[in-house]
Length: 266
View 1 (cartoon, rainbow, N blue to C red):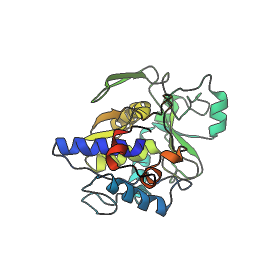
View 2: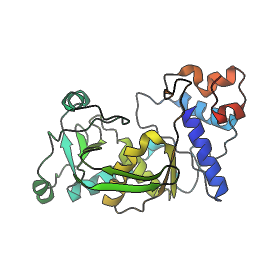
View 3: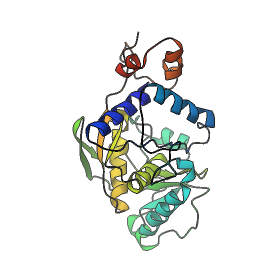
View 4: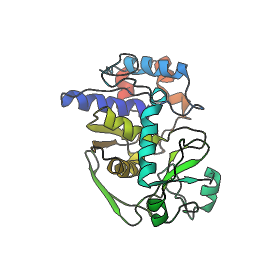
């Protein structure tokens, strides 16, 4: 429901401003993405009454709109960041990072990195790595410690975060050769001329990270609209594990599109 309501908000904002609504299938994680899920997304969102102008099922000027088909774009960005000395390889596992974190990074899905594999800035700038492929290693983006990253969210207002305190060096490319979310969406937003990104408020820290990537890659920064999260009666954020509240289950239970769009949990 949360993802669907966010996309509904994006559709409404595009309509109000005479913009173009783009459906992008972010399917980079092979463990979570299956063809049948994609078809279900199309069916459920059409049922909700959402129509998009560009997407995997209808094409458009910036095709392909499926991220697993856009690897070359991400690889070119990785090479540019490598050449600039802004990224470095990391051998730490996610478990290692979580165990080393001094405290949970609340409201974020990426724990604060300790900097164990981070080279000295002068060393990275003077001798950038000369690898042809990112495969086999995690690659992290070096954040400017202590710098304030600020932006004015269209919905939530001014946002300010401190690099190195609120978020640390983040994964850009995974050791299993999968481009990370942060890199992929920045590259695609720039390539597809996105002027406003609409997503959930749980991704505010991701936006701060992405602002650094936009800047590092010399790409134009879009506006951001972060939607309030959908929560149950107890105030707990709805997650994918709440299968009984998936669009498909609600459809089968007799809910109308309007009931789902309002997000009222019965």
